[in-house]
Image (tube, rainbow, N blue to C red; front, side, top):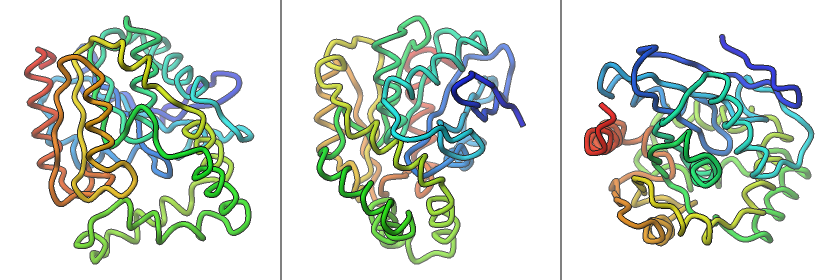
Amino acid sequence: MQMLDLGDVTLHYADQGAPGGAPVVFANSLGTDMRLWDKILPLLPGGLRIIRYDKRGHGLSSCPPAPYSMGALINDAERLLDHLEIRDCVFVGLSVGGMIAQGLAVKRLDLVRAMVVSNSAARIGTMQMWADRVAAVKAGGIESLADAVMERWFAKAFRATPELTGWRNMLTRTPANGYIGCSAAISGTDFYTPTAGLTLPSLFIAGSEDGATPPDLVRETADLVKGARFELIRGAGHLPCVEKPDDYAAILTSFLKEIGHV
C-alpha cells in the first residue's frame, strides 16, 4: 500500500509496471476507487509504468471536509505526479477524472503529453442537478441514490449480472463527505474555454448507453480540441472499462501506439 501525505490530504496510490517505462496515469470517477481500472490493465502493452490513485474522499485516501474545488482535485494529481517525478504522461481520466485530465493539461503541460477523456465533458450537468444530488445524500445517504446511479453507470445487460452488487457496494461505501465534496467540484466546473485552447494529442471515449455523460456530450467536448479522436463503445454505459474491457483496452492501446507512447 502506497500513501502520500500532502498535509491537507493523504492520497492512496499504486505505482506499478516498468519503473522506467512510459507513464500512464489513471483517475477514476465519482463513487469509485482505483479498482475501476483492474480489468483493462492486464490487456495493455507491456513496459508501461502504470499510476493509479484514489482521489480525495474516495477509496483509501483521506476524506477532508466537503466541499472540494476542482482546483483542489487537480492540485492533488499535480502534487502526486511531482512527488513521483513523472513528466510527459498520458493521463486517462473517467468522468470527474476526465475533468481533472483537462484541468491538469491546461495547468501543467510539462506533466501531460496526451490526455484520454473518458465518459466526461468540459461541463457535466447543471448546478441545480448537483445541488439536488447533494441534498439527497445529506438526507438519505448515498444509498438513496444507488439504484438510479447504477442505471446511469451500466447497460441493462450488465445490471442483470452478479457483478453489479460489487459496484453498488463500492458506491454506497464511498464516504458521504467525499461524494458531496467531489459533486461540488463538478458542479462548479466549466472547462469549455480552457479546453478549447488545448492542442495536445487527445482521445475521447463514450459509451452508447451512458446515462451520466451521453455520447453527444462527450463528442461536443472532443470537438473543442483540435485533432482530437472520438471513440464510441457500443453496449456500454458510464464505465465502459468495466463492461467492455477488451474494447476499451484496444482503443487505448491504439492511441498509445499512435502517439508513440509504447
